[in-house]
Amino acid sequence: MASPASGPHLTRLYLLRHGESRWNQEGRYQGRLDPELSPLGRRQGRALARHLRGLPLEALYSSPQRRAWDTAALVARGRALTPQSLEELRELDHGEWNGKLWTEAQAAYPELWAQWLAHPERVTMPGGESLEEVRRRTRRVLKLVRERHPREHVALCSHNAVLKVVALDLLGLPLSHFWRLDLDSGSQTAFELRPRPRLLLLNDTCHLGRWRSPPERSL
Image (cartoon, rainbow, N blue to C red):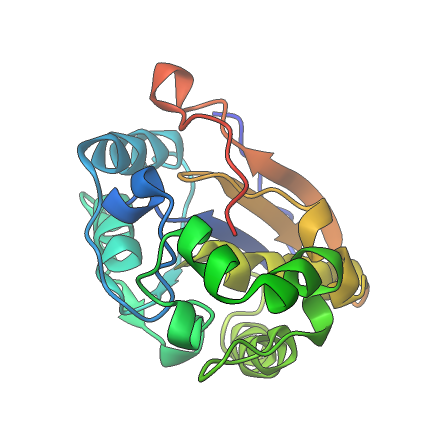
């Protein structure tokens, strides 16, 4: 398989983005709401699970939201492994944008929309949260992984904004780089957790083939 082999003394962390949801197809903000996987998203989840089959995962943590949890369940199927739910892996809370089409949010909040695209690190969506708040909660997850799983293979199944924040943090990059990363539906990204983390894979979707989602900007 394409995933790198394990090093004997280092934790490997795999960031798994859930398969496409029905709202991804529609171009709708999901945030803390709970749409299910689309038929394509389930195919992506199964393809991701097949791709990771040879990986000796010792732990799998997931957002409790259905689109992530159902993807994690597909990855865990056939393993002696049960996904563990972590509230810290829930998607960025888009507040009043939750459930809105991207075009509706743009029309209702044109100035904030423009700032979100230009300076996402400065934005707190009305009634929602900021990327800095996401970073604070995901740092608790990284601390848990380092303390509980030394020298093991660990996967986090979560959402676009959350995993991008985790990846930026591990790369030592500021949140202003948020739009410079793409993490597609059904993708995997991998790090070796050294004192200075080492990137092994970024947005790997080779396993999806014809099941890859059309290019999108996941706002």
